Amino acid sequence: MKDFFKSQGIEFYSLIPLNRCKILKGYLLEKNGFSENDNAILFLIPYRSEKAPVNLTVYASVPDYHRYVENLSNELNKYVKSKYPHGNFKLFADHSPIDEVHASCISGLGFIGDNGLLINEKYSSFVFLAECVTNLTDKELGLEYAPTVSVNQCLHCGACHKACPSNCIGENGKPKTECLSAITQKKGSLSEGEIKMMLENGSIWGCDVCQNVCPYTKNASFTPIEYFKNDVITLLDSQLLDSLSDEEFKKRPFAWRGREVIKRNVEIYERSKND
Ligand code: B12
Ligand code: SF4
Ligand code: SF4
Image 1 (cartoon, rainbow, N blue to C red):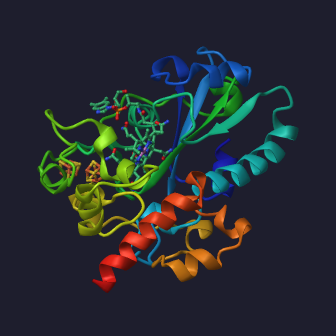
Image 2 (cartoon, rainbow, N blue to C red):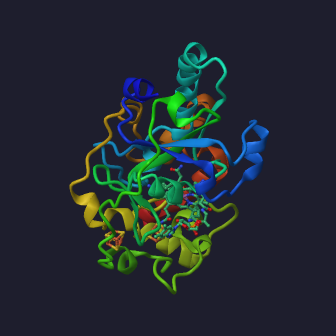
């Protein structure tokens, strides 16, 4: 498996038994023929492009990572077919059976910041988290289980807490349903307060405030993965949005909500520029 990750340019990966993970959607394991006695190889997908977005978050400006994982899954299937004919492998990301932040942390791939995100020493939190679930053992995979290592820690500097526009961070933080990221993705109409918050924080899809202010982001590396370097949208306006064919639209991270929600946000943004 080391060869596979190397061939795909994936630098950070680590094996852990699933029974150490927090299971969020157990049915995804059962549906794919796995149990909690199987293993997961957690890995990081750095995605921050050098082209800084103007009115989107970094994750919304690059092509959709779910598609990247789909392509990777095809590559994995080709690889394991001859090497491990009796193995069962399945890649997950986001729509996943486990709490990925917790699992990546206990795999030693980074630490959990006060902003709730997995922070990696090289890429900061601008990494998507994914995992390859398999019924094969550590020996068969040629991997060792992650040791309980201590990696760098959150500085508890308070920068994310202070900057969070929704007051979601910290012991008395509001629930994550009030996170600006969730608000920008909500269907229906937004309240005046929500609109103000979205415009003040510069992104019409998602929120990067607690990542941008984190000291670990200052010297973080950009993505080495070609998929996230090309086809980056830095400014999304109505003209660009309307010009995207259905096929092109489907490649964007905001597509899963349909055109209406992102169109609403683009219109709010444009109205504010004209005022
Ligand atoms: C639902 C969801 C959201 C919701 C709600 C977030 C939430 N935390 O509930 C919304 C829409 C708000 C959201 C926003 C974002 N999300 Co989101 N989200 C998810 C999703 C699908 C499930 C999260 C979940 O329900 N976890 C379970 C609950 C119980 O977790 P929790 O309350 O946050 O806390 C748990 C852990 O964080 C951990 N934990 C927390 N603190 C500590 C401390 C210690 C010491 C330890 C050991 C553990 C620990 O234990 C807690 C209990 O299990 C995950 C993918 C996944 N399958 O995990 C992505 C995920 C967390 N999101 C991701 C991203 C990128 C984002 C955004 C940055 C996107 C953006 N730019 O707008 C923002 C960031 C918001 C933030 N600061 O958290 C990435 C995070 C990557 C990373 N480096 O950590 C994930 C992992 C998706 C992926 N596959 O890459 N998200
Ligand atoms: S993503 Fe934005 S709103 Fe959500 S916790 Fe981070 S700073 Fe707060
Ligand atoms: S901004 Fe400071 S407190 Fe917040 S996650 Fe980064 S190091 Fe931790």
